[in-house]
Length: 401
Ligand code: NDP
Image (tube, rainbow, N blue to C red; front, side, top):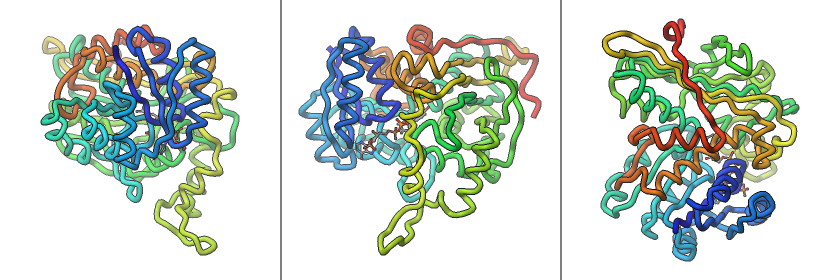
């Protein structure tokens, strides 16, 4: 019997819960809690209609540690899957420790008043989880998540050591809106407007946001401009695979997205410090989120594909080799299956798989773990079976830029 409690009823929570219900031999009980209970109920109705599985729903403010602890004690799951926002990570980890239950998420903690992306806060929970005999798995989405498992799989099966790693995240989807983000707009814009950083020979190299750009021809999508960015898995990969000399993360953006974002930034709408409006404090970015389309609403109109993967170069039997491993996901297929577009799908499926690794004991440990610390094989098998098949091919050499 493995009962799980999922917190967060956005696009990612919706996909994860649908996929858990489709695997009811692994997830024998599913509860979904979020700030707005009506969103949980709508997901429960869709899950029931699509799979016949009933799930329990609850209202919770996950920033209230006592209330979250009480909910965990009431539901009695073996695992809490945090698919709310990164701001809730530490509060939900605290509640898991108080209730004696394992923890998993898809995004590293961020303080709400500072766009700072690092694992230090969550890694600081290592001793507490270890002493409690509990496991916390960090970052089981696509990136972070699958991209780290891809790197570990290449190291296990194709390369003896990795010298350079490039993570390429391409969304070739078109949602028909002038400007919208494919996951939570506040989190997305904080990430995209942060300075770019990459790891090179033992140090972080920082460059201004969205200034380093190259074109890459993505299979099933075509040529796209991709921009150097910081992304949290760079930190954990540099830590856990210390031989890697250079790790970079690239994400594609269309010209219209960049133009809108530049204007919004120039006029101050992406600020995360409070401003006084009509005698009331508001955060411009939170206000902007309120007027932008909800990512979950983009499902019916989004067409096209995502293509996310890793290019790794390293030694195999003394010879340098380069491999490219990637998944292509179709927005319309994802929508047909779960009622959500591919960005939610490519995050929610790995969230289900990470939870499956934990509740089946295929990945186990005491303390706080990142994805690359475990055997990639059972995870990679589930990707193939549950909607995110991957391919690997050998390239002539690493990226030439
Ligand atoms: P959404 O904004 O669509 O959903 C977030 C959900 O969390 C909403 O239902 C929201 O409630 C709920 N929530 C927010 N605050 C609280 C709170 N205090 N207590 C309880 N519930 C709360 O986001 P997404 O579904 O797009 O993303 C979910 C997570 O997945 C994010 O952390 C995001 O960073 C991460 N992610 C990870 C990716 C990866 O590849 N690793 C890729 C994409 C996303 P309400 O509806 O009331 O606002």
